[in-house]
Amino acid sequence: MRKTTFSVLSLAALGLTAQAQQRPNVIFVLADDLGYGDLSCYEGEAPTPHIDQLAREGVRFTNAHAVASTSTPSRYGMLTGCYPFRRPGTDVAAGNAGMIIKPEQYTVADAFHNAGYRTAAIGKWHLGLGSKTAQQDWNGELDQTPRDLGFDYHYIMAATADRVPCVFIEQGRVKNWDPEAPIEVSYDWGKPFPGEPLGRTHPELLTKQRHSHGHDMAIVNGIGRIGYMRGGGKALWRDEDIPDSLLHYAIKWIGEQTMERGEQAAPFFMYFATNDVHVPRQPHERFRGKSPMGLRGEAILQFDYTIGQLRAALDSLGIADNTLIIITSDNGPVLDDGYADRAEELVGTHKPGGPYRGGKYSAYEAGNVVPFIVSGAGAKRGKVSNALVSLIDLPATMAAMVGVDIPAGQATDSRECLKTWLGRSKKPAPYHVSMAANRSLEVRDQRWKYIEPSRGSIGWGPNIESGYSQEPQLYDMSRAAWEQDNQAERQPKVLQRMQQLLQSIRK
Ligand code: NG6
Ligand code: CA
Image 1 (tube, rainbow, N blue to C red):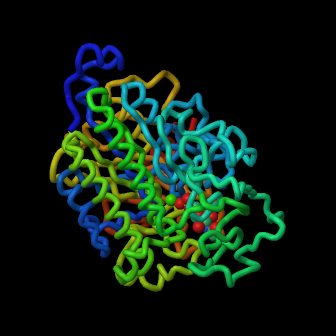
Image 2 (tube, rainbow, N blue to C red; image 1 turned 60 degrees about the vertical axis):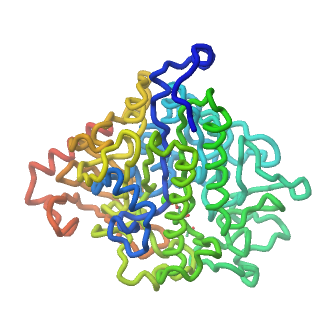
Image 3 (cartoon, rainbow, N blue to C red; image 1 turned 30 degrees about the vertical axis):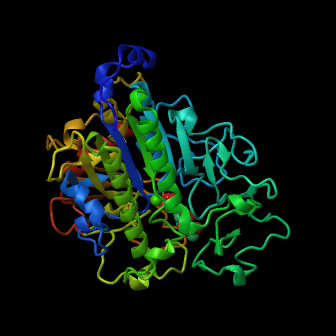
């Protein structure tokens, strides 16, 4: 069990104050493509008992929003407290993108670090690695990693499960690197590695999952991917084992921070970004056949299992009461996202986006409204809050919680909302801005939502309403028919107010 008192000597050695040691551990769980309606505590049909229990013991939010409706910009905004629309190159990153957050940028991990916390990033990264795109040496040490962004430790997937390289990276090096199979990665379209079979040329090798769109390049574990890859050998992951692997290193790291450090233990912050429920959905065999919704439903069960195991580990280490767990998602849900996994055919009456319109990629609400549960140390118990919450506020809110100041000029879009996040106030965030996949912006306050005019469509066209329109859209979010009744013409004053708000934020 963690000791909560320090000898004067160890305090001085760590440069910590007694107050610092009383600060809670924080585990920030970021699911991938998990929709507002996907958990059973949000009326989802796949049972998620472990998460539901955390929600009952904490605060469950019904009006919380991710910064974008795709992964990279959502994560960029959430970790840095700067809107992704301010920076080009923040869209869905390739697996060989250079690091998108610059080392000199302040992150939520820096806030914890400055407060004397130990920090880790585990799971899906998708924010680029190395100082230069396509120049990474996957067989040596990466020259820019989460260590440059305030994370002491990382065990991560470079991008997504459907993008190469299909290996884990620990402390800047490929885990289980295989000298017999040096790794080469390329996103140079039209120039595959000679002799390497591809999904599009060797469909007979796609033994585990077939693509419905894209995903027809490198084949790893019987599944086609985005991007070309050669080598990897023993280091290549087996998709079925990804969640267990992430969980293993998460629990191992937490154990090291608490048990092994004993008296020396500082509080910790862990950014735990699961691959579930992103494509390719290839849950472990023990979840197979466990959901009538098929692979996507099983991935939800697997995500819940992971949270249950994490919670059990905290219990057995005796630190559950002093740990704050936040559970949310990077963007809204999608069914067919490029693999023929029958998510669409088997979804039945389950509504991944809850009552909202749209989904991943879209400007409509289901693109960025996400489950958000804050549970444990410091949070109120048994509350449901409909206060507007925006994930851009993570850095400022966490900095306030651990009592550090954010340096001037950093995390400039992030606002401190600690009382609301802990369920101690109903005060909504003043506004929330999110970015759709076409980089158009939406702004909303507790009542109104404005979607700026934009062009384009959701690429190849998963079955999702984009909400992109060349006309301005204004919706009253307090009414039941959400985003059905465009009031832009009938409410010129509100429209003008929201347009001016967006304009002033954009500056
Ligand atoms: C799309 C991929 C999709 C997913 C998405 C990013 C195709 C056809 N679609 O381009 O499968 O990878 O990018 O998802 O390749 S995200 O959650 O990481 O933003
Ligand atoms: Ca995502």
